[in-house]
Image (cartoon, rainbow, N blue to C red):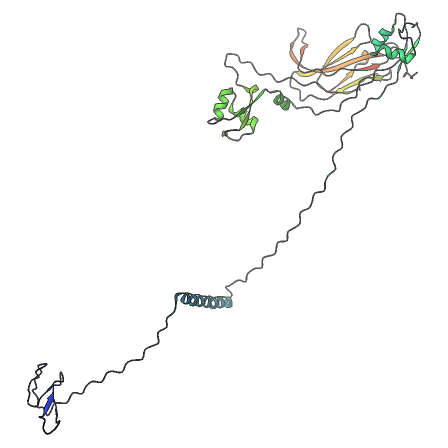
Amino acid sequence: MNTENTSSTTKNTKICPTCGTRLSENATRCLVCGQTFDRDESSVTPVKKQEPAVKEARMPKLTLSLPVAIGLIVIMLAIGAGIVFGVLRGTGRVAEPTEVPTVTITPSLTPTPTEEPTSTPMPTPTELPPLEYIVKEGDYCSTIAAIFNVSIQSIVLSNNLPADCGTLYVGQKLSVPQPTPTASPLPTSTLSGIEATREACEKYNYTVSENDTLSGIAGSFDVSMTAIKEWNGLTGDVVYQGQTLIIPLCQRNPTPGPTPTATLPPPYQAPNLLLPADGEAFTAVNDTITLQWASVGTLREGEAYGVTVEDVTDGTGRKQTDYVTDTKFIVPSAFRPAGSTPHIIRWWVVPVRQAGTALDGEPIWENFGQPSQERVFSWFGGGVSTPTPQ
């Protein structure tokens, strides 16, 4: 408790050390805080008023906006990545990037236009020299014209005869013009047996409708699904609406029964004759003559070519038919005309098929295709030289 002497006229007072209340000198208890004073007031150390503590220094606050903060973070990450890259590169763990070669575009070549193929010229017939004929008893212009297959008018004009051609006499030499041969057509490609069968097959084009199935279509036409798939190049059983299918009617399932009839292959087309040319002349020097034609396809077992040769000049009408599997036939020398009169020989070829066997064991043949066009050639008998034109 501190005792303060303010003046001579003021009583001595003391201050409570607890609350600082000024009290009388003789007070033993503070009326404000209740503090008692047990010690001698002389031993009481006056309480000094505490000075306010010195405030500690604070760091200045730095306020950043969000974009600036994001930018600083990106910069720090880039700096860190650069440091890591430099460290790894120094240790040899970072491979240098390989330079990618530049692709050079090669200019496309412009195709050189090819020349248009020229058409193959068709063969032109060669005019044959006239034949010399000696009139025999009973000959008329009409009979001579029939023998050589020419017109009466051509004989009249070639020999300066009267229009009625009625002044012929025995031993008279006539110049008979040969018929102008027809130009042989160029050989055409023939169909193989399979192609001929496919071409001759009866077909029907069916358009797939909604809700159609391959099995249903096959059942409607009584044709197997396998046949329809083969004819249309299908790999599966799926068909779509609007699709056009080829239905091979020739491959319908056989009618059920005890003895179903096998489907026969289609007949062949007409053979294309090649040699000799129509109207060609042969002399006694030619002992044999070879006839040739183009193949109609691969012949099956029991099939052949029927070659017919007929002498239209001979009064008896000599005619014979032989059957060969080759595409050529040699006219036997026994068929060569006798005497000095030229004979007109007609020949043609037709595909045939064996229909049975005769009692003598020889096969019975029937036509199994279209016959070829007929051709003729003239053939002189023995002892006659090549005629000279008049």
